[in-house]
Length: 436
Figure 1 (cartoon, rainbow, N blue to C red):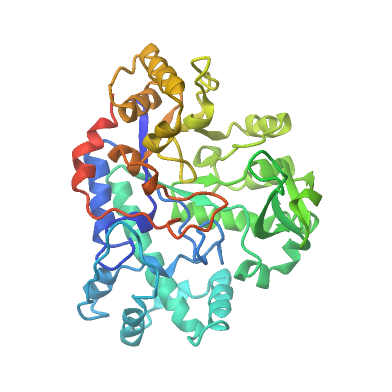
Figure 2: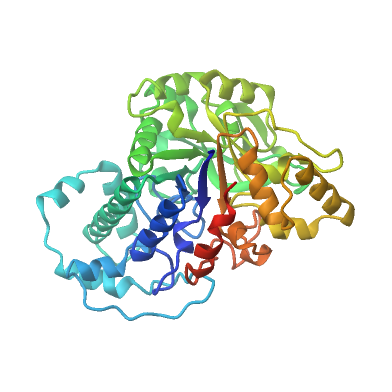
């Protein structure tokens, strides 16, 4: 049977405290996956960030929202926390902070903590946060220690249940971050990262990030980036590498100018990956690369040279008019009906013309996917095609429409990065649909 996975951000887990975290609900989710023979849980980035998970303040720090209050109580660091009622949206408003402060006062430093606190990149992050708040850097290090241990307990539990966790490595940190503040020589402050004008955006996109200083990275044999990969692969079993196109050639825009004025420059390329893969802690099979969008032949050649597994989005790959999957011959692929930036299956289906709805049903039937429910039919196709791993979102398991989207790229919707489950009841009942 093909390996299967479920995509669900940590913040989307059910929670008694407003936002999903590393608590008991996360363990229950792993139990459900294990009971149903699901091999992977994809969690998206868990880095500390400001609003956007793909804009990490540090590649070493974990988002403070993910501390489990129940686990703090279990350790005797806090008394019983008050629950808060939430529906289908995560609430980010520092509700847990008072409990963090209580736990910090009651925490006794151990030798294990002192060893953990030696991490240089985490020290930089904690200093960065302290300079912007009234709290000490020691307080932030305490939170990172709690987060790291809660996360590793959860990851080890998943592995014991034969579930591997797929993380996500964002391409760039934001302008203001611990990364750019304390590692300035590795960034080019004269240029912004983004994309050129296209059908969707006549001015191009600007990502709120500086591009890398490739010459300085190369002088140091890419240690700054390689250490990042190695640390992330301690946190996760596999790592999705965002914006692989940028490793071949990246788009840079003169700072403060229109995206129309940008140009492509050669990326890190073969030299970087040769150096990265020399390290025994980084293995080709542990990386899943995102090569979506405007991909040139050189990007494909770079990916094939190393044999990287890549991501495929079925919504983009289907040619409904001609009734075929443009990418069906690919095997070294992880296939998704749609990912965190896409419409749900049902939401996408509703936007199709009547003709294309019929074309889609015909395509599924021609491929032996005869389920009357389009959601089930598409999931079935993902399981039957040649891709080695199929991953679907919880929203698609539940058959939800676009009101349950994780993110709409290029928008500032309050609903981005906030959808969450209320409980696992319906998910338990329907996860069996993601099977042959």
